[in-house]
Image (cartoon, rainbow, N blue to C red):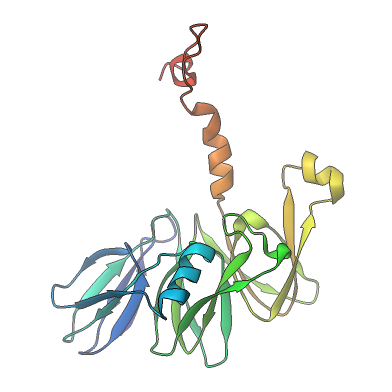
Length: 240
């Protein structure tokens, strides 16, 4: 099986080419862009109903996952996430674990690879994910996406500080603590809000764009209902 990431970092997609019959790729529901007609597709709640419900309700991923199995050499599939941005692959050995924020998991390869959720405590209140993170355990290879470009950081003894909206994932060797940016004053005046302080030794992946920031940017342009005084929408005031 060969992997190739295309059109990154702006509109990344994953192309997988199978070397022979019986190879399998598991992906999020709705991620398939195109595929060879000979691939065998199976849709199910992997890990059972309870595990699937945890991934969906707590981890922000789909309840069902699709398994694509090759029936011959040369077949391929192309996958993409719903977000505009980069893709990355990361191999995990036996006993290695990677944490992802909700919505960033795309696919994985590996018969014994597991996708579960883990309670992060109140300190795990990352943007868009609530209190839970996806817990990915090897052996296998995982593919994850981001909104914008992806940056990989090697965290060292000094630690590293990240805006919570930009966290994509991190290795389980890292510890993290949620803090107010520059104290109480910075929380309200700096425009940063909460940040996450990582310590230990390991890898950290960041996205260059924030869905929350995009929502704040677009909010003033939303149409508003006409008031009883005859006022019109913001869109009308801007001349559409």
